[in-house]
Length: 160
Image 1 (cartoon, rainbow, N blue to C red):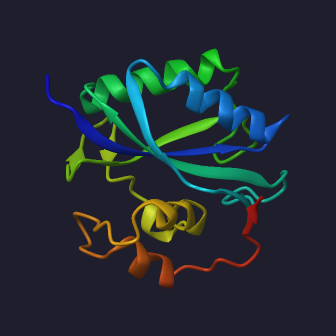
Image 2 (cartoon, rainbow, N blue to C red; image 1 turned 90 degrees about the vertical axis):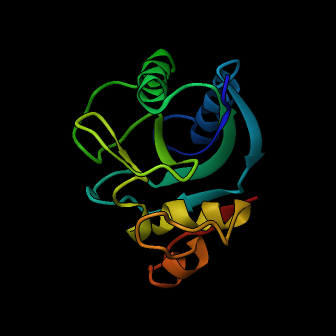
């Protein structure tokens, strides 16, 4: 069984945000083995701005799941953890997104890998910097460090 290295972004801005991130990470096993966790960052909302600040974190995991089964598993996990469908980019208890999956480039109706907007999202790139600043985006060929340099990090703070 082939194992894959996957980077996941986690975000929460409802209820006990830190507990939501910890619970989500704990729930990743046994389908995923958490290899590394970034610092946690408090970030202003993105897209829809009239909502509480988010806590964001990135984890590197090892998994045997292929991309689309992994996505289905993560969506089921979000619901099991209490996520309710709401407006796009709106408040949420937990959000788990696939950022990178090995060096895979995938465009399917269900899933795009690497995450299509990660290069413009400081709230994802800053925690990714903690884990792998030299990780290269397989499409734009820029490292995490280079992509972050082009982003606005205003209002983002590290949570102790």
